[in-house]
Length: 113
Image: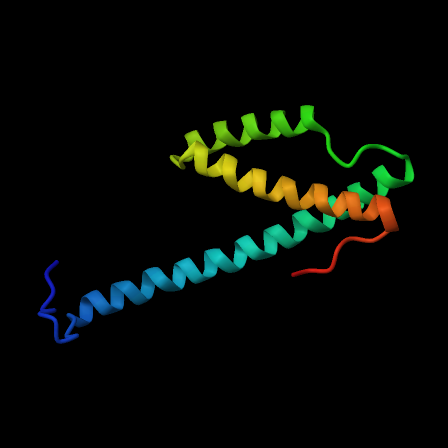
């Protein structure tokens, strides 16, 4: 597929249509990711309250290591960079631990940023 873009902003309507279609899909995926993360954090909040009630530590390094290994394998099978998947999960784990620490200290999760 060729474009007629010569620096003037003119783009073949078929290219513009394909971009719009792909971007709509990306927007739908982004919305799904946000909703899935919200559900995940609802579950981890419950875990945080359960841990606090039973005086369990906010972090579980053995489980975290298993989860990272599991996610890296899933990423590989999905043709996603495992290092990226690990960074993403580490970010989420860090937030979960922060929430669990807050719950353990004062019975509630930190306010959303």
